[in-house]
Amino acid sequence: MMRFDGKAVLVTGAATGIGRATALAFAREGASVMIGDIDERADETVALILSEGGRAAFRKTDVRRAADLDELVAQCLDRFGRMDAAFNNAGVLPPQRPIHEVPEDELDLAIDVDFKGVFFAMQAEIRHFLKVGGGAIVNTASVGALIADPNMSAYCAMKHAVSGLTKAAAVEYAQAGIRVNAIAPGFVVTPMTQHWADSNEFTQMFFAQNISGRAARPEEIAPTVLHLCSDGASFINGATFTIDGGQTAH
Ligand code: NAD
Image 1 (cartoon, rainbow, N blue to C red):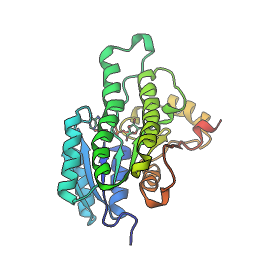
Image 2 (cartoon, rainbow, N blue to C red; image 1 turned 180 degrees about the vertical axis):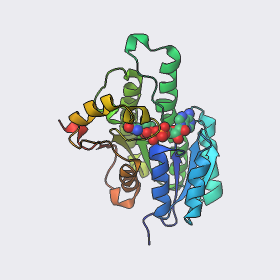
Image 3 (cartoon, helix red, strand yellow; image 1 turned 60 degrees about the vertical axis):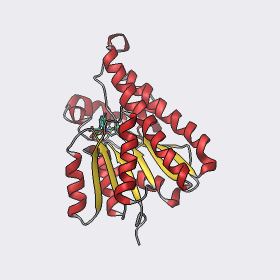
Image 4 (tube, helix red, strand yellow; image 1 turned 45 degrees about the vertical axis):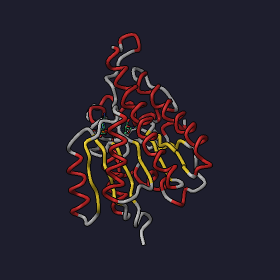
């Protein structure tokens, strides 16, 4: 018997990176996985899950559109007959610039994807969880929700907002049996951060500051998400879990 046998989970942003690794991990522990992503390469995540004998489906979803997220939840219920947990992970990292040089369209992108995308996803998920008496939600924040790095103001502000939104939702829905937590990963090598991983100057500076001396692999983030969505986390609510190899410990 695996932890998510007979359960269905929704994952946004699972074409690549942390979301892809987490969708695979859920499927390997028995979950049916409904993926929403703007990038049709999410089909490849589904194909891999199916090739391993798991269950998964993909619906093209732009998390900036509330209607897309309503439809994603509906598709999860239609395909798998249930939805027990959701991982709201889709995100973007706008170009790095000082605050006085950030153009409005880049600010809007961070607000729309990194904050409103999570808000809209939670609205759709919570409406369902209220009907069935509970569920678990995990939102992807970042160490940028805890500390600030230069030239990442909009991203950092939106990740702080995700952490705050997570607490607000936990407070509002705890009595309805809905747990809402967030994760705060440090530097994880994914398509979002490949340009940093490829830069010797950046990695030397970063690794010198990080007590682990390395970046994470997406597979090192997934287990915490699964735990937070599992019954083993029944008393964890409103928390933002740091997964940063000790980056923020000193
Ligand atoms: P990634 O680029 O591999 O994944 C981001 C995913 O979000 C992709 O699948 C992308 O297609 C999807 N996406 C982007 N815009 C979307 C939209 N409008 N609608 C639907 N899907 C959309 O990068 P990642 O590093 O795996 O990022 C996943 C999450 O982790 C993001 O929220 C990111 O901010 C966060 N994060 C990443 C790191 C890191 O170091 N990589 C650190 C902390 C937090």
